[in-house]
Length: 361
Image (cartoon, rainbow, N blue to C red; front, side, top):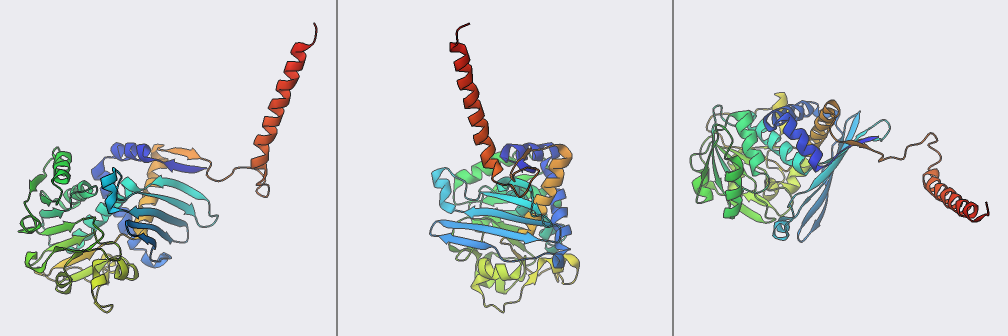
């Protein structure tokens, strides 16, 4: 049987564990798996682009488990009352190919993206960074705010979005968070001024320049997570040229990240090297660091692994027959024949019953 977690089951599981603990444990799971980088069979995701968005498949595996995520990105969906990003995923055994978990990943992707962002910022931001600007206040913004508040102790967030209703929503949802001050800003420049960490999480599929060189201050850490497909950026190219840039998986980020604007030989450092200590993160206090994040399948593997273990321990979700059960694995057709035979037997029994009822006593 395969454990199945839909959105209501995942929501209950996260509430039961608590968002701060969930984010903390998920960040640790992601870190643990990045430290096993060489054990994974990795590839850039497969993308199907259309004028309105993109649909992607994201596979990865180690010797024990295989995982994949189906995910979309359609910025215009919000105008139709639909989410911009939706996802589901599977965790399976490598030895048998049998699926262990089928799970929603829309909520979980937001949580794993936020956990990854905060995990990286702990390595790259200057120690004691407590002020963050959050540019783009859509569906993932609360998760980012809570991850940085929980894992780094960020206590002041200046927020801006070109859609005031999105900011209204963000402020309302974070109003009850203890120890977190949320300040509305009138523009991106106003939000960024004086911030030690800047997170950009915008959705438009355009070559945008949300951050320009004049906005960047010495020592800033920039968490750029909105530019995640060809033709979609958030940072002016000069911001990247002046910074130390960290990426998840270089072959994928060269195509999808903000560094798509730069020559193929522009130097970047993969995250696993920073986490393992084989490469420096921040090199000095005044250095500007950029996490050019596009989202990588290893993070989804970590999320699915963590959620699966949590679901089993807490009895979350349901077991479903995603694969045909049966004692004879060579007899697949019987799964079609049995219901037909049962229906025939039921029909015969009904006819016999009618005949008996019409016979004289």
